[in-house]
Image: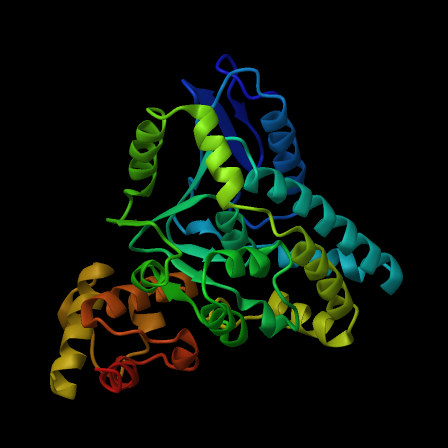
Length: 272
Length: 80
């Protein structure tokens, strides 16, 4: 699917379009933009479209159309059901293949030749947080919360979150988020340098568009060169992350953790 | 520092206003999931509002198993 001025794309999990140098991608998969195989297919098409852009684009904004938030992370139900339907070795191979595919997509967004902005609100957890971390700027409204709850499943984040967070902020904060699984609000996220702008409820997309309009005033090639200089993709750590995730995934404790989450009737399943 | 009663009262007022429930229908020992009719995502939303209102940071694991306003007020009071 190409990204151009004449045809906006509306898919099952997201829509995207191009207008006057600005690309906007909006997630819309209920209940909270969980990233499963269909989302990955569509993200791959989007990333391929980014590589084949015919018109110059100065900015990309990623946001969510859903009230619950930006994205609650990987589709754990699909992950669990798929792994149950396969032999252990096959499930491990399938997980590695999924991770390698999502890493290719997120690396492409991370290194995209334009300034990228995540406009976030509400739940920005796990894989959703990792998607936001690929962007150059995060603009959040006051409802946003950020967390890596993976440890409760016996896993680490698998979509590149830790290497990217380590690139952007101090290791002590990374440990806090990873090892406690707790969520941060936007005030905290801005204090630690994760979020560049905090805006009122419902204003993140408007603020992101205003920022994109500002970026359009600068020379495009200079911006691309500056980004390449300041924001290297942490390739080695990203590869290590896949290996560690796959090693952890093969343990029975992970299947038990996934089963517990999927079957949970707890009123607070989102609280780590 | 506000008294525990004042903290509790402010929580009840904030919850009533945010979830559009009459204040008089809320009391300290209510199960807020049931009284407010909220799910876990909305509970996170309430946590965000409370952190902002009281200017505190309340790790969400401290809320695990907490479902009544009085205990919630105690957790917040401990961080004021």
